Image (tube, rainbow, N blue to C red; front, side, top):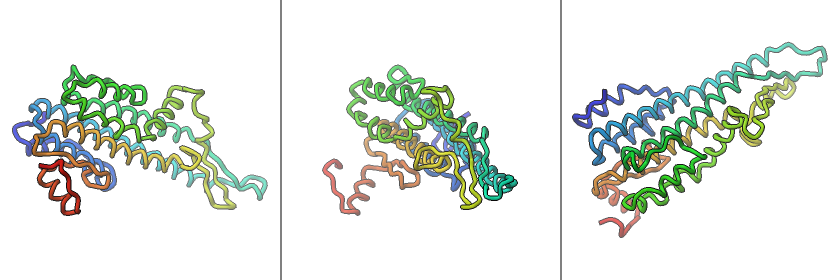
Length: 288
């Protein structure tokens, strides 16, 4: 059970409960350890803070699962490459091309894509304790995000103005979301004729010493895409949570999000932010 007597106990409880498998603890350092401190600084009721942090913890665990699936795909790919190199030559000594049709790679990609959709479905539940469940009750990401866009448009006036460009800033620039959901629908549900399963063939040309492996697009292998998508969903989750929680911070505080920072989103006082910007020669009449 999450303790809410004070922030230190709450943070300690959550840190003990979540193990990060990613390289350099990316999920903890970039996402969890940024979003949770922001939540503790909000003026939400204790039970709502507890709910937010529970949702963030589940989201972190699902991100950890996504990481592990990605690494399993990579391991399977390397094992297949090793197997191909050991394959016996055919009767024609000039024919040094070997291939394997891999159902395992198909399976890991399928699970990866399903987990992405699940993460997005969990992500859009974060605003419910902030706006109220009667104002934000999304069950899924829905229609490749259109349901989220409509939910922002239907917020009451006290939030609508402040969040008017949130959807565009956070989701509309993320082309990978549409690509991943489209690929999931093709592979998992057979939409639009499904995927051509020949893309899961691994080939090795001994003459050139090169492999031809499954491709996400004409320019990018699936292996490369899995890393990029993981990094993107980590940033998107951080920024979405950070901006939503910023709506419940006291007037003395704000949230700064930068994909190059660790954590990506951080709570800071207006005074500290003003001093930081002025140190860089940036001045704004928006600070008082």
